[in-house]
Image (cartoon, rainbow, N blue to C red):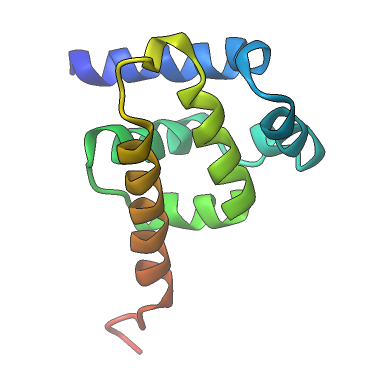
Length: 116
């Protein structure tokens, strides 16, 4: 439970302070695509938990992640990695986990439902 609270705080910091730390490229992508308004906080938290803790992700969150889009997903992850709070995290590992989360969602969305 404490871990979830830590990630909640980190996500809030990311959303409120991240723009200052972002490179112009990521910041521009996020702004032009309205990335921060396309996905609700519970889904941001679930996606970040999946990426940073290698946890699972629900079908509903995957659907929301696809509404967000791959461009926004990548830009937000990269911007998060620029935050000093994540200076001890391996960017290569997190980017790999981000891609894995996206691919897991793609597999969930593309797989036929059992009732079909």
